[in-house]
Amino acid sequence: MSDGTFLRYVALGDSQTEGVGDGDDIAGLRGWADRLAELLARDEPDALYANLAVRGRLAGQVRAEQLAPALALRPDLATVVAGVNDLLRPGFDPEATAGHLEAMFAALTGQGARVATLTFPDVGRLIPAARPLGSRVRHLNELIREAARRHGVTVAEAAQHPVVTDPRMWSVDRLHASPLGHERIAAAVAHALDLPGSDDSWSRPLPPPPHPPLTGLRAVGAEVRWAGAFLGPWLGRRLRGRSSGDGRRAKRPELSPVTAIPGRSLPVEDGRR
Image (cartoon, rainbow, N blue to C red; front, side, top):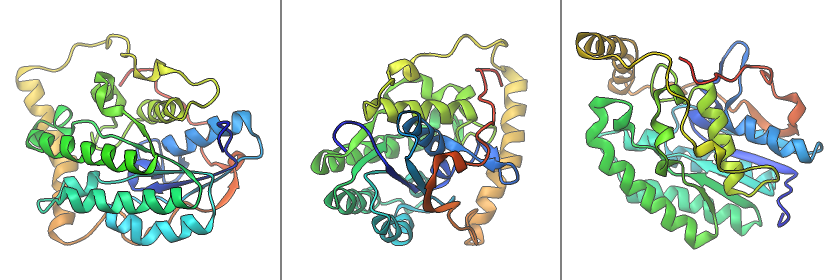
């Protein structure tokens, strides 16, 4: 809707949109899309929200599994965020990945929905071992921008602000946003959509951390522990052809009132880790 009021919001994507890193599978995942829905409902209490995202999905899988159900829900707002799982794989094809995103942009805008997406931060700033992937991230971001321009899609330019790679914005696995990170992503998308009450405060740096960053052997030890806890299991799943999303379904496959979001009382971290 042109006045910035949306009544039917549908989110498509992978683990970030599902909300991994913000809550858990017992109390409920919240995540940036849930938080964005709450911002929509602040001004329009009758807003409805569905979240079709499933962790581990590649862009092509999001298109194959989520686009048709999303179109059937006839949203007036849709968010499409996918591609990180693609660029982490050895056979990454940026044009193919962006092509899947563009197909979703085209179908949703063609049906009359306002569509929003994100650019991605450089994962090498968070994971030293992933620094060679920086060129992949930049290439995919540019392809996303080009596809978005062709279809009138709103882009929240998260990649351009240093705060997005502040470690406090990320959970301990460094692949999923923390509650604070999810809150800022929601605010970034709200600002890009020019929702009432939104501004650019999401892009401002966090206060100085209470403790200095680890250095020397302590930093090396932290990297070793991270690799054992997160990188090893991720590589193991890749070698076995498995995904963290195997057997999972969308958490909100149908439009329902925003007040029905589980875990809405989950606290937001205040910048401390």
